[in-house]
Image (cartoon, rainbow, N blue to C red; front, side, top):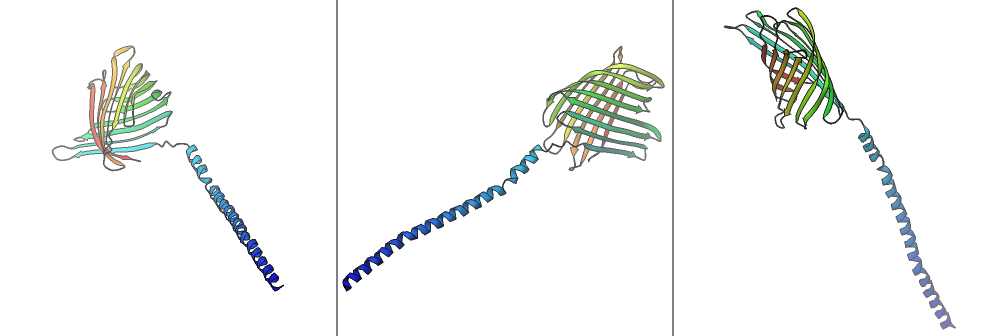
Length: 281
């Protein structure tokens, strides 16, 4: 009887051990499932936190590009005393703005000079031009110029011209454009007022050097009177600029104004070589 009880106890202990052994893996399995679920929740939380980044990028992409006005002022002074007594002061302000569809350019410049206390320069000039681009290179334009030159006896000369233009070269650092269109000139030359129609032919070339912030440009404008071709105006400019700092640069400009029919007792050609300091703002 005692042997039977011992045998039954041994069987009971073995059965209990057998039941307990598979129970442990079940508990571990449940624990693993809980761990996986928690990890997944954390991962989803991270994805939600990163959602605002694409939204910010999209807003930046949709923001309109800005095309600011670029303006500058130029001034030059030449003064001598002793065997010669001369004074020459030049100044000018220009501003321009370019967008993918439109280009604007405006400027005012002047010069005043004396030689032995006798006035040798007294000039004021202003211009404005608007270009509307129909393609990457072709454009239409409207231009106006105003001039008063006391030494040349030009009390006023106003030139207006609409027309068409084309960029033969249009690269990052180099441009070459030609313009053609009808025009009209209003002037008081030597006390005689006149109005006449013209044809305007013009070209402008500019190149910016990669190093040193230097640039070179030239332009020529030809205005013949339509019903009297021997009466014409030519305005040419040649300039070079070298940067001294981010905002300051040294500028040298050669201007040539030719009038085939100047005021009485005046020469046809006026040439000016002007140097000055340019400030960008």
